[in-house]
Each structure stands twice: as C-alpha cells, then as structure tokens.
Image (cartoon, rainbow, N blue to C red):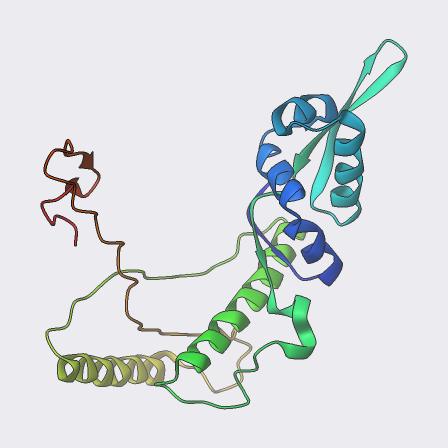
Length: 219
C-alpha cells in the first residue's frame, strides 16, 4: 500500500469522489470483505459489492486474499493507498499550465506550479513503485512571521538571490548525463485559525488544544 496515490484517470477520479466509495476507501486502509464493510458503512452487502467492483475496476482497491467459507468464496480487499490526490491530468483540457505565464508574485502561477508538482511527482512515485526503487526528493515546510510587508518583500528578494547562487554553483550544464531535478520555492500567507467563541457569563469555560475558551489563546 502506498502512503499517497495520485489519480490521473478521469473515470477513477469520478469513482473516488462518490461519498460512499470514499468511505469504503477509508475503511479499506485495513483489509476487509464486503460483509465486514457492510456492517461498518450501513449498507447491504450486495450494494457494497457493487461499489467495490467499481473501485477495483479503476485500480483503487486490490485483492489481498480469498477465503473459502462453505460454498462461498469471500474476497478480502484493501485500498491501494492510505490517501489519494487527484492529479490535474484528470482534467487535462482545463488543467493550469505554468508555461502559459510566469509571475513570481501571482497566486495563480503558484497554484499552476503546485498542480504540476502533484502531476509529476505522482508519475514518479508510480514509476519508482513499479521499479521497486526509492524516489529521491527533498522538501522544507515551515512558517515565518513578518513584521511588515517590506520585510516580506526583502525576504523574498534575498531568498531568490540565495537560491540563484546555489543553482549556479551546483547546476551542471555540461551534458555529462546528470539527472535533471525540478526546484520550486513557494511563499504564501498561512490560513488563519478559526476564532474561539466567547462563552456566555454563566456558561462553563472549556479547555481546547489552543488553551481555555474565552481567554483569546490561539487567536
């Protein structure tokens, strides 16, 4: 089972978006039969079998084993991945194209780059899995708070200069057969956490992961 599978086929994407099939995929993080799933999702076994056949047809679940019970053969299946992403390739005719425009300060270009990354890394993961090889990638994720917009602009400028310097240092344009790599650096505002509701004077205060409600903690 993969940690994440990227879905490129439009029909497979459509199948995965059905709420019942999404629930089935979730439950099949561990192997299960139609009978076991029926009890978990609250549907007749025949209905669950119908959805399982559709998911199996699109390569989203796979057979783990068959168990013989009397005159019946019970099929045990498992999802092919713990999580799924739908690639822009599933909407190829309207997928964003990062080559159509290039603006370092455009949120839309950032989305186009992110979409291309999902598509390309998804293909690489599938290829590496088929070849039983490891895929060499690297990522950094973090948060930084800027006092002013000017500080943010200065940071972006310095980061661009530093990355360019590193690229000039390590890039091999001699055609010696080295492996080309894609480099994407992104910076965007972090989403705001939902505000905590102030309790009424006679309402008991509740403790949350961000602190005690009504104190302003985490806001």
